[in-house]
Image (cartoon, helix red, strand yellow):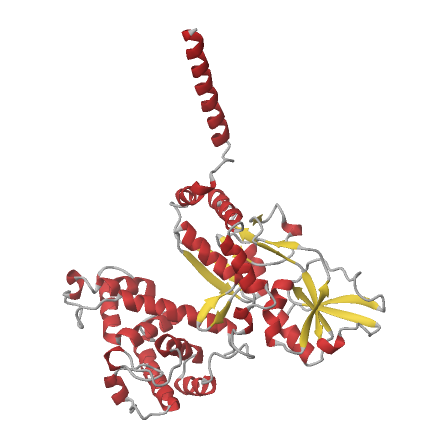
Length: 454
């Protein structure tokens, strides 16, 4: 009897072991609670994940000085959950995005186009990020389809199947593709009565409607289809991790809240984004543009700096006596003739002069594409500390023309070994604050640069 009992225990243990080996060896069972931990192991060998996100209003825009958007927020949540940095590049040219999508240049490409002709030979698709469908866009008073021939315009790279069978039987419906136009261009043409109908996906339509009071979302003209990411076909383990995370995230309350935030016709974020103008950053835009043009830099940079400094509050008094909408320190205010009685316009013009001064200091010392990072850093810390960090870069064999390398040594200036170095002229500095400042300003500036007209 004892031998039989021992045999039963042994059989149960062996069977359990075989079951466990069989399940885990196929890699199909991963307890949800352990997915994040396993995912991190999968991508420990990788550096920062590279993402290219196609710009349109639903997925990437600036709201009250912060870059947000449906897909942008999903990517930032993934960065947080996987505890792995993500470098997001924004591209607004659909032709470039089409090439990028087929190139395996990025780990993730967020771009909607008709993928059926390229699967599975040329691209690797993620699990669905969301679903959407095509809708008709028209002027509010033209919702009766009373013309004989209906021309429906689609924007660049829009190739999803359309079905007009649910619409009026009067006349015929034809599709005109516009390879050089974005959906915003078509909506402007609708408002100007240059065309009568356009088609875009529901997620885009919901985002854009608050800016086009004369237009309305018409009926659905096609079936649901998934919005998927294009993944790098060489990254199998990483792709598995991304897909596992997507499936788990879509079951969460956070995802449901995100859908309500961006995909509801009554979204407070969309309706309040920037009043009625998609190209506005503040009530001072006209002055900002004139001052920046006069002094030779992009007006969206000074707008991004002002938002960071004062949120456009004109009479703000800050730490250390910094004053006004530009939050310049007293010695700088004196240099540029600013007092507590100066108008907002005078403060902006003085700030523009100071930014121009900083541009002139660094423009011959750094790469052209890096200039505004150095200017933003110098606006926060003063140019001396940035130059110190550049000198440390040179001494330790790093690239002093790149902000990423310089920012590392700016942070190190809080350590005695570095701030007492003979190449350092301005001494101790807690540079982490300035590095964070630059990151926030430049994230905002890059958002303005692609969403606001120059």
